[in-house]
Length: 131
View 1 (cartoon, helix red, strand yellow):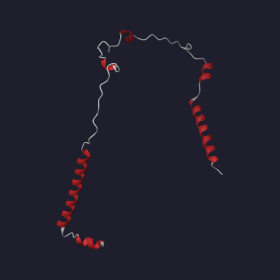
View 2 (cartoon, rainbow, N blue to C red; view 1 turned 60 degrees about the vertical axis):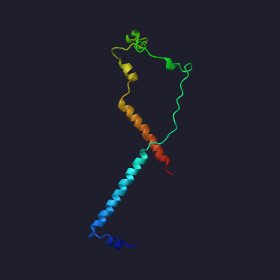
View 3 (spheres, rainbow, N blue to C red; view 1 turned 90 degrees about the vertical axis):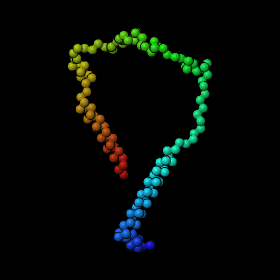
View 4 (cartoon, rainbow, N blue to C red; view 1 turned 180 degrees about the horizontal axis):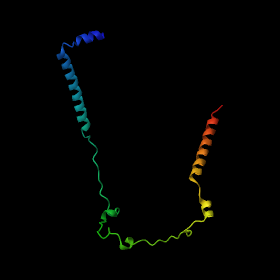
């Protein structure tokens, strides 16, 4: 069928037919949505859950009933702990220049070193791909 013939059948002058068709279409969509939601919401029948009572000799944890005294923190644990560690060395109040030079690294130098290594690896990867 040609599109022009279909358009001619749906004449804008005949607004009742277009309105009725649109109303039926919307009604079908709403009805379908409602039915799908109702059927999805139904509970499925599952197999019954079987609960086995634990053996009293085997599972003694069920016999334990805590008392309020069992839940309190003992007073020994509330005190400040006695530290048993000793420092490896005594930290000086003032550092000597030799000690500073021995351990100090300038962050800018570290960053430059890391970036230069990354750049060298990137250049090697690029040159490996060159035929």
